[in-house]
Length: 289
Image (cartoon, one colour):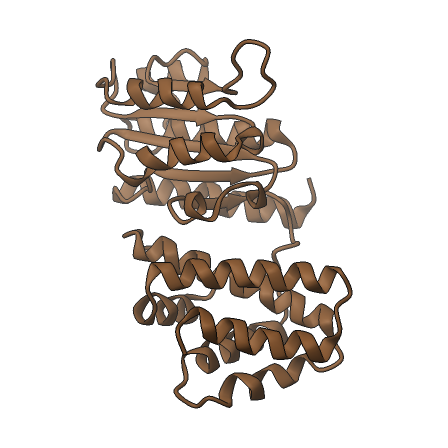
């Protein structure tokens, strides 16, 4: 693990501890990690921190910590969702988890489900878990471990907080950050030409446009998370708040879908001028302007 990735991971461990201590840890999280062993380890740390009864979480000395670290805590469940001959995370496994979630914990005041290999969940299984992610029992927490958040439905991503252990591919430049801010303001502007003027920064540079669209997708996803009632700091806090406060969830979902389509068009080496025209038209259409 590089120093950069290690530092990022250490910050996320600290974020988990701080959030649990403050009593505002989300009931649904997604751990994104190409090395699923590392992802599962981080998920176990979250679960351990949640059940710990000590002051310095995780204290490693309380009975809950000892059982969690020994992989024998009765209120921490880990499953890959495989049933029978299926190699995927089945919808039947999700249904069993949903039913079990309404049974009160055995020893802790919390019940945690670690769902491994979330990338193996098909759309039916993800829709099944979505139902309980939307309104989980107060004591239940779900931790989905996946190789990539791109394998998850937008509706699921809108209900979870993402912890990414992928390294620095999520970094962005000042130029990209400025473009994201400009795009959000132009999108919401009453000036019909504002968005067209803003997209001028993408002239003859589809790859720069792609980078900004990826970041815009993050803003829209975070805005959905905020609309769902989760309060936390986002990487693009101002832009996330603007989108959340000015657009409906339906419009935001449409924006996410359009951004993904535009990114796919760039990957197919589409014409730059046509891309910019389509970008302006589709984004404005999504919000009814």
